[in-house]
Amino acid sequence: MKIGLFGGTFNPIHWGHLRSAEEVAETYGLYRVYFIPASVPPFKRAQTSTPPADRLQMVRFAVARNPRFRASTVEISRPGVSYSIDTIRYFAARKRPEDALYFVIGLDAFREISKWKDFAEIKALRWAIACLRCAGWALRSRFA
Image 1: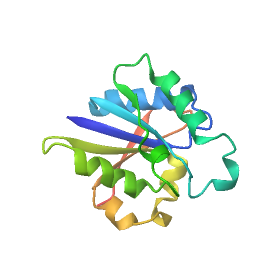
Image 2: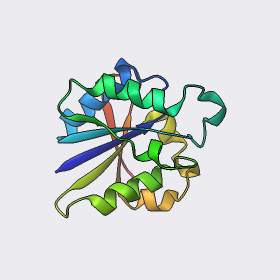
Image 3: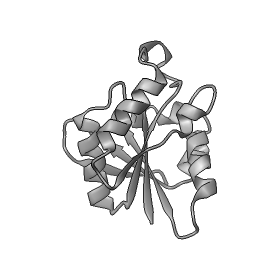
């Protein structure tokens, strides 16, 4: 099963997030897309004034009618800064051998990914999907 991990602050979640996730899911045949709101985003700490629990609730409402989408509490439940690599490790430890994880992020975040914690390990996944804002389509990007 192909599983998308779509992280972000979602402050607030909006139609662009939902449409981008739908495009990515359709394009790459993702069975499930987890929307993962960050508790404490490492690069947007000062910009995130909406409490994590409220952003999670907004995500839950936004994804409720799409059977492919789910809200994940993994970063909200974990104390401290929300690093994507920790979330990837969490899902990787729980996936079945036949499952494949796809990392879904916005293009703005993708441009800065080399500055992220344990970037080399994220790179080792070999595939990332970057969503282009306002363009209505997704760009597949290979790290290797």
